[in-house]
Amino acid sequence: MAVATRAAAERLSMRDLPDFEAEGLADGLEGESREARLKLLEHLFREGVDMATLHREVEAGRLALLPADIALGRNQKRFSAIEIADTTGLGVGDFQRLIVALGFPRPEPESMIFGIEDVHAARRFKYFLDAGVPADNLLAVTRQVGSSAARIAQAHRDLVASDLIDPGSTEYEAALALREAAEDLMPMGEQAVTYALRSHFVEQIRGDVIAVADEGWFGNIKATEISVCFADLVGFTRLGERSELERLGSVAKLLESVAIEVTNPDVRLVKLIGDAAMMVSENGEALLDAALRFVEVGQEAGEELPALRVGVSRGLAVPQVGDWFGPPVNLASRITEAARPDSVLAEGGAVEAAGDAFKYSRAGEHRFKGLKQPVKLFRVRRDS
Image: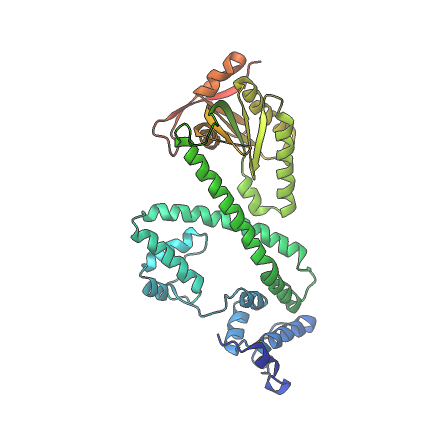
């Protein structure tokens, strides 16, 4: 779209303005809503937006979003999937699968709906394919990224909608508020997401390195045999998709309070990671007792707290900056995926370390990613 400089646009006089009403750009609106639409159209036209773009955005029901799109640089030339394929060398079908994996509808090949950022995404996808990474693996990772990004966007959208846009705003007022958010708040939000992503990525890589490290890599720090417990909220992702930001905050605080309540001098709460809590102890019996109490106290919280799945493992781990790294940490996290709601699953090492203080029943063998051999699991209950 053609965009004039702000100084040139400000020189436009009233007689230079198109007749927006005659163009049909305010059809179906009356009173204050009609006046707000005309004011927004005039504002955008004076900033250099051409009539073809105004018609397109009105027909798509996106006019109020256009100022924010301009601020974010997303108002440039549009491309079709076919054009992106021709430009990047990525097949149309592969590009469509990429968009679907991100969580968006499958695009028609001829639809002119993509921007330069989509061209860059296609090039990255093509680069990984050319490097020999299987397409199925790439799409699996893309689905995870798309799902996580959707939840992050949901949280930011709730924040913007509740704090920046008055429900009684006109279209003009809402458009300017969204542009202000795009100019001031979204860059800060992107920086916060990048910071969190890099921090978690570095921490996970550190865990992988420690898991295969030779003795002496980390100075005098010695590996310690510990039991590790992860307690994971069931359905937390779905809750985030349908709940308000305040609801998610209250659930996270409740999870934290439950985690603090079940710890004791022998069991330490290491960290809370969104929908999960991690505890460790050298005392295997004390750790399993805390794991069961996690479920019990969570049930006492009623419907305010979703059901918990708890996984426990034992092995050698290394302490680093208040955290723990090593095979039992990774395994305990994965065991939660196999646990039923409001239940505790433990592998053999954790069961042996806890002794006869609890009842155990076989829960079969499970294969977990990154482990060559299946893991025997046991369901843990009180011996009462």
